Image (cartoon, rainbow, N blue to C red; front, top):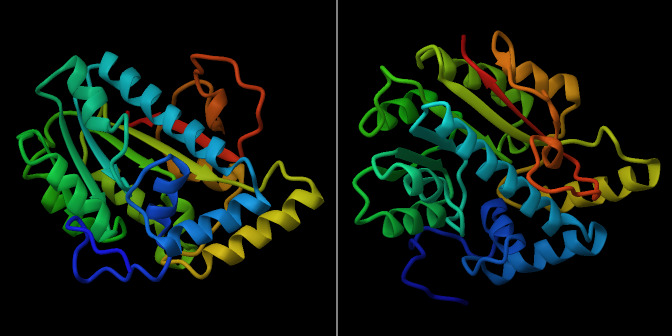
Length: 265
């Protein structure tokens, strides 16, 4: 069994973690044998999973840069995962050293490593919490973020691990209700909308693998993803595949992940 200083003693490294699997897809090193084994099973069924993860990460970078141009210099990153190249604080603070970022994740490895990385950064920190625990998250975020000014809320590749029974729509609405006009919401969400029958069968096999991890998959349709933005002004081009949202390069590869950004009026 792997024993590393950045691993909290409470972490069960024998059970796959979706955050650590995602870290593996992105080429990171903060994952364990159980995570790699599950991730490799997914890759065998869906060889494009790493490419999808990269496209998702690229969307995040484009969104943060765009919001910075709109005067938004503080971010609440829900389900932030394990730090890797191109973190939100790195992107934002490159243009504005005073930009503030709060990361939120319920994965102890993600939060432990994030806070180690941010030890000398007074304008960024990580909170160990489930994004569904809105009161806890908002209270912790207020210690770093100024809620009298617009905030960019980022929910990247997280909501498809929250089932409908856990009230994801209500949680997102609560976050946005606490923030001032001019705040933004950015979401990416996996979907089966565009899959063929053969691809759908493969996707169901992938879902079975994730059912053995710390979070099961809940796929949503275009309409269901759009619902998260009720009452908000959608930025063009609306809810689209992540690689079609204001791309900085042309990519023909299909990515089964929706991405969108909305502004609170």
